[in-house]
Length: 469
Ligand code: B12
Ligand code: SF4
Image 1 (tube, protein in one colour):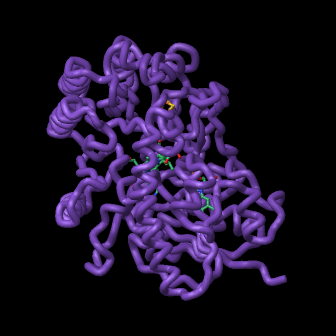
Image 2 (cartoon, rainbow, N blue to C red; image 1 turned 60 degrees about the vertical axis):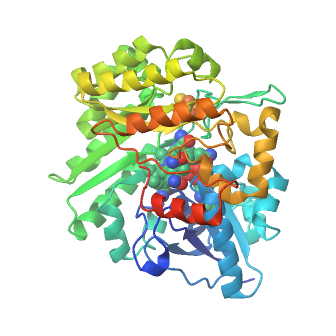
Image 3 (tube, protein in one colour; image 1 turned 90 degrees about the vertical axis):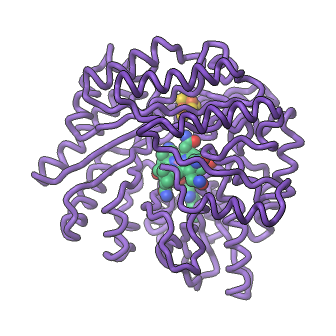
């Protein structure tokens, strides 16, 4: 039997100008899609890569795989499906992947994406759709991406490698913050059952080989530096593995003298401080490998707020110590990742404290502000299945364009923050942090079902090209 071929699509960024303007979208190497592409290629299935931020696609296969980068992409992917259906004029099977897909129930998934869509995150479903045995699919952490990188033509690879891109280093986080939609320890609010997650590294030999390939390819394309965003959710969580990763990067550098590799990532203050006291060589070697910036998840202020959002490991002292020490002891620039404005939890006082803390860190340690507005229900986070949010979730299911309002860079809206007073205060403090010199977040406006068509169009225009990093 002939093996199916799959068109793999990275949709145009939701804030990209319309494709008709012939302007490029947000160019960013689609690592998640490439990982899946490499797994399919290794299992014997051919793929064709498309990035709508660069070029519009022509679908020729019966199977179309799409990566959803978070819930704001849901409306974009629904639109993409309807365009492809019209273009192709026959039934296409959609394999939809990206973590947000795993947070939807079967019926929510079907209601949003229709009967021809399958959950691509699930290997059994993926294999069944493609008529292969699931055993043929390598585990993601044992997959080299080189087969998929080879599918990218030089002119597109040059675009990717001359900008920051994500390197798949590890996945998963042992903590369990309520607002977080990443792969993490999870306590089902309905059943109380806890599913523990341990950070899972990729095989360091595979990472070294993949990075070596990217450096060689960059050199061939006249590029002298790679800017890498590590996929880790908490860089210092598993220091022994981190050290192996740092040594692998150093090895690639020593084989390519003069080539620059710059790394950044996200972390908790807790893991940084633990690693500093128990295994400091992991931090030192990582810095030697090129690590220059870390985004600390401060995510609110005061013990009450941290406890209420399941982030009880944070204290002001720990955040201060980690931010000060990374700068002064290791020369790493701290970013203040402030996911705040937690609905029904924050108050005027706690919002003000979060703003003042950010300001102090900027003044005292040259920190970079990165504010975000917490959205308490997102597919995959605790709030999504909390009965208290049932009504809001049903509004989203009826009006999928409103998934954009769950973007963490979007201002609080009636949908996500029903209390008017708190909503105004959240937005006031969020915009205030955004206006601190050096801030890197560009806030966007939410699209809710309560807007007129005209207002929604104005907002789309306002949001154009305001990409989150
Ligand atoms: C790099 C990155 C980005 C980059 C770009 C990524 C890109 N184009 O590839 C940038 C900086 C642009 C970015 C932006 C955002 N991001 Co981001 N990002 C990441 C990060 C750090 C690494 C991604 C990665 O390489 N992962 C490694 C791959 C291998 O894992 P994976 O993505 O889970 O993919 C696997 C499966 O999901 C599946 N799969 C994925 N795609 C597909 C496609 C097909 C066809 C199939 C079959 C399977 C499949 O197979 C893969 C292999 O197992 C992750 C954190 C993380 N650890 O994943 C966050 C993460 C994915 N981002 C997230 C979010 C929310 C966003 C934003 C929406 C933030 C926001 N503003 O609200 C924005 C998007 C902008 C917007 N307005 O919509 C969340 C998603 C949570 C969720 N459950 O939906 C994550 C998990 C971060 C977090 N802590 O919560 N991001
Ligand atoms: S917010 Fe950060 S620390 Fe908390 S569970 Fe998510 S990734 Fe882990």
